[in-house]
Length: 441
View 1: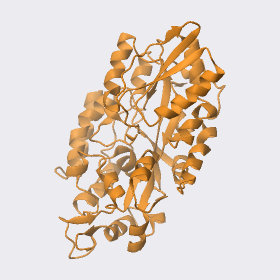
View 2 (view 1 turned 120 degrees about the vertical axis):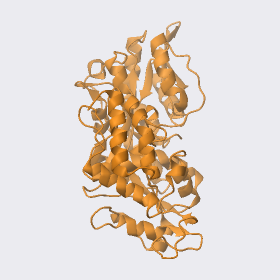
View 3 (view 1 turned 30 degrees about the vertical axis):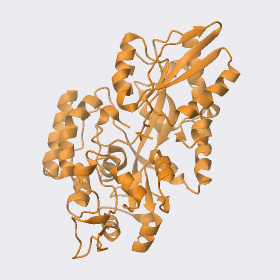
View 4 (view 1 turned 90 degrees about the vertical axis):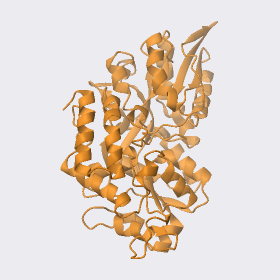
């Protein structure tokens, strides 16, 4: 499952809570709504081959209730999704309903490519996850029906944590720091020397403390907000090269380059999944991530693991909150049928399979217990993600040009993680490059 989480290496053109976002199989769009006799076929596109079966189950129930409308699910791989999307919109071959994330919807909303959900559905719907509604509200209108959402928590290896005598319930960085000492106890070299030992061999590490890396959603957006900073201003301009930003990024990169309690950025900059793979193999004690990592970890590890609250900072525990919506194609040839499917996608009944199959937290609040119960039956308490989402949060990247800006800033930001440029200098240069690409200040 390709996460909705976003590494800087993957850049924001492929942002993903998810933000992010699941790694799809190789489907190819046939798009376009079709009619066969008295039956209308509405096409639905997404990038997640894990979520696709849940939607197929949902639409089977929809068609049973609406026999004149059939919904065809098509999966376009994440690596091709954002390249194919503008081509299909331009040619008129785009699906009637499709998934988007927060970094991509604004451009299409501003260009008139998306249905205005506020106008088409209005307030006549069930309760939706408010953080997702806020994320996709632009110019006083909502542009997508909330489908799934995620926040951040801490996966931990129970055996490693217990052996080190670490309390994961109150980890904090900054003043009265409990995180660094814990990570030093949890990080061991090949001779079992901990990172706080004089004999520690930083060149031969057997077990790392945690995943400090260029992961926007799980690592540096939360740390930045916890330092009192922000990634973007209200006008969309990047604003992370602040005193708070320097504080947050210095702490993160010191975990990598100074204290050696996190894997080298030379590895994680090019493989955003490396830390999760190490956690799965029992080579990392703590892994801060979102519910998008649940299935991958549960289905591939033999370690004894559990979930705890995300790490806190000077401003407390602040989580990234992200989500994915289903948007309507403004150019659809069968508007009435498409709107009817969109309404179904906003119901607890329509989203129940997403929770029952353990895909993610559904955007319809009434369906979220299905996801909680799915994991409870497997002995996993996912309530920490709900706690993160309902507590302090920081918004994900937004704006019509944020992808272009992110592509421009990304190379210098990766240098910051590598330690090849001083943090303050690197952040300023990255921010300047990003804002220049967006023509914002």
